[in-house]
Image (cartoon, rainbow, N blue to C red; front, side, top):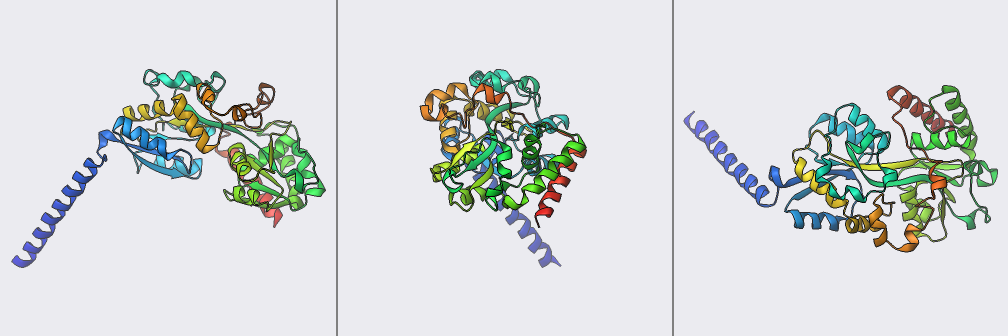
Length: 357
């Protein structure tokens, strides 16, 4: 019995030494509570050199984690298992998160670089007065296509996609709001429409698009379009920019009926342990030169007006990615439809996918 007691005592002592050593190492490497910042962002959505620069300038160690959907991000924050200090949700998710009391109000006095954001992208309905969020990137949903593979035809309308000549030539992103929104916009309805008759009408029209749809895919749409596996794709503008950088034969258009104007914004979740560090990180990302470098790396449109002078002229004057005010007026931000309406969108989208099979 005495030997057994001694054995357990040795285990306890050794464990304590190991834990102390690990704690010391973590602290020396920047993992103590006060000088660590946990950032939760979309995959490949920041220039890693900027993270290194922030760490060097502030002596704050950044732990960077990624998510692949707003829903996954929000669920993890709701569960509270990890103390995220900064997250980057999309506009309709920000609306949900603030309603569910998952966000900490921003201290604008700690964000002097907020003045650099274009006022067109401030004080939007999903976050009045930007109490909880700061714009990070913005863009549109539209059509990337290869004119040479569709006999030189020019796509200007959502309804062009129903042309029988495009049989088995279209790739769609796997998103209920995007695909249902396309159907609604093609009929002249709002992409936030909750009228069930209109939604059924959109789904019926989408069913008629089925012969033209080659596949409904995720991130691989970028590789597939760049490699000319299809002629037409429903994509986000940032993906279109990346695809076109790989294949110069492709073009991108926001259909004339209008489309989605989306935003990804930086927020501080209720799980935050380093609120001061979170403000420092957000303000750092709002610096014009930092924002320009990040924009050049990611390829999406920046809401940072002061950053535009650091970007190539051909980029900021490209109306495919920085649309004119006339087109911008036709674009809609996704609204929080509520659980019941969103479930109905998802149900109709699933029916559309099943119809294809």
